[in-house]
Amino acid sequence: MNGNDEERLKQLLRGALPRVEGESEPKRDLWPAVLKRLDEKPAAPPWFDWALLAGLVGMAAFFPSAIPVFLYYL
Image 1 (cartoon, rainbow, N blue to C red):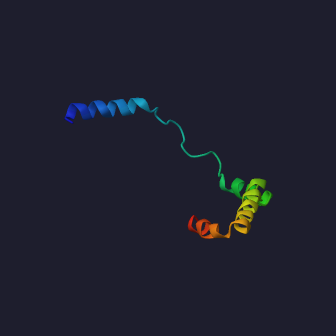
Image 2: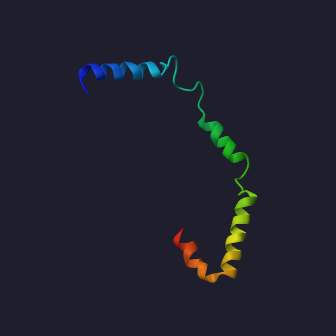
Image 3: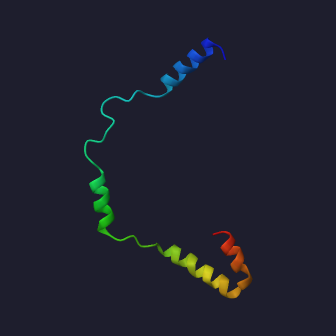
C-alpha cells in the first residue's frame, strides 16, 4: 500500500461510521438498578434444564458405559 491508498482507506473508514456526539456516558448510574433487579427474584433454572438432567440420568442408568463419554465432554 502506498500513502494515497492509506489516506483513501482512512477516509472511507471515517465516512462509514457516524461521529458520536454528545455525552457518551449514561445520564444516571445503572449499577443500583442492576443490583435491585438481581435481588428481586432468585434465579431458578428453567424446566428444560431439569429435562436435560433427567435425560442424562436416564441415559446413565440404561447405558452405564456412556458415563465416561459424558465425563469427557464436561
